[in-house]
Amino acid sequence: MPINAQLLPEFDQEMANTRKALERIPEDWLGWKPHEKSGTLGWLASHLATIPHWGATVMREDSFDLAGEMEPQPEARSLREVLEPFDSHVQEARQALAAATDEQFQAVWTLRKGQDVIFALPRVAVFRGMILNHLIHHRGQLTVYLRLAGAPVPALYGPSADEA
Image (cartoon, rainbow, N blue to C red; front, side, top):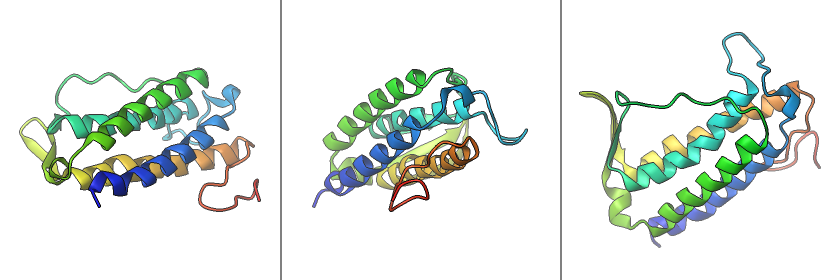
């Protein structure tokens, strides 16, 4: 079975679960953060909306250099500013994932900062680690923010305290 056929069901499930969590964000809490060292709920939501874009980048490019010009992560001021880019990035990443060959997945993808290599791994490992696992990690943070904001936490892998 091709690698993309193995990854697509996982990708679809994680993106659907992430959208379900993003939809629960109370807009009047977007500027709130649980601790002075934490990002705001709006920043976290924007970060989650952006991660799928990186999936398309990983599939199209052979590397990324963090030393280059990067736009700062925006802080969403509305749920629309989160959901519209998220949906667009998910579609973009899914198309790149579906079109990828096993050879592309086995090719090495490199993250560097100037001359320093942060990691160089097969693209399939990057997609799972830097995209899917990274998204799941931050979605977990989001569910804590939702709980603290009094918003219902969605059932993701089974029931939550708010959904049977």
